[in-house]
Image (tube, rainbow, N blue to C red):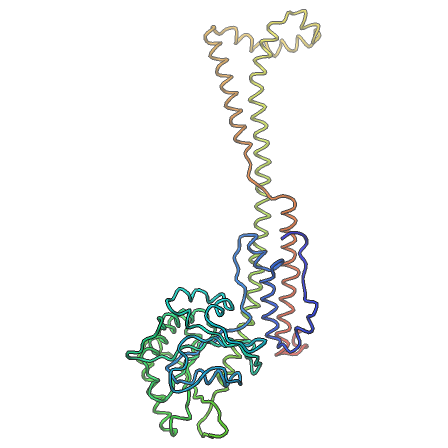
Length: 451
């Protein structure tokens, strides 16, 4: 990325924003701040050795439970379209993603993984790719534009054979989902051991994402029958240490039908409120992560610039040290040559070249060295000269290795890093502040915003 980094905005922003909720726009804008190919945070972070992940524009809600628990029926009710097949038989044999889009479309396994690249590790599970599908519909009912439902296969005990390891796949998906809705139906399959085993495993790592519901509550008979079914389910859950926790709640829900009125309390709107709460929490987490990632990138850029300045200072010291060693290394043979030359010249030539006073000054400084040199034997003189030459070579070798410097940033690279730092600090953080204010204005007044 070269040149000045600029904040980019779509020319048709008004038309794009039309009909889009505030939360949807915030998540979309945050994703754009990360994913932009030229000035996105992911691109900037990679240039300074930091790895970031772009936030998703929707939350992922997985529905699980025994077969015929009403998972697909709930999705159809939520989006107010008949998307998923429903029935007493096991209609959902694989994992079906249901999301909103521009037109009604059905995607197979390979296209699903292209649409959701963060789910591509599912290919590692043998046989699961052929049982992945995506249903795209144009519904914008409730908060569906911000939700991707994952409809899982109905779970049963006994000799039922699945074409893949359904338990492991559900546990893996639980790591990526923001919310997991567990449906128990009152028709005899609620105590399915496979369901309870998976729920217990999910509770160990993602207990805060699990929500339990008694589905098809209107089919449980009278109020006493419903209470008995709920007691049986709760007793079975409480037998498992991980699920025996304080504040356990299991609302009764069923799909409203004007042709089939029921006196049973229907808390299906509670599910909608739970999804709404998860969306709000995701928006807050996304904005908080945006701020943390900005700080992380700013710190990485600042550290690189500081390290570059320290490296440049170290290189200057290395060059100075090398120059001193080089001068010392050459001064020794030059001094020996000077002694030889001066010793070979007559007094008259020295007086003519340096003058009488210059000759006397030179003699004053060189006389001690000459006397010491003359007091040596021929063999000692040879050893002395050899030692001085060796010392000269050693100094030159030290100078050579001292001159080795560390690579530093060019002027252009430093300007680019400074521009990236300014972009993150001034543009992205300002954008994040504005998005947070837009989010808060949904709940509080402008007067409270000014406090």
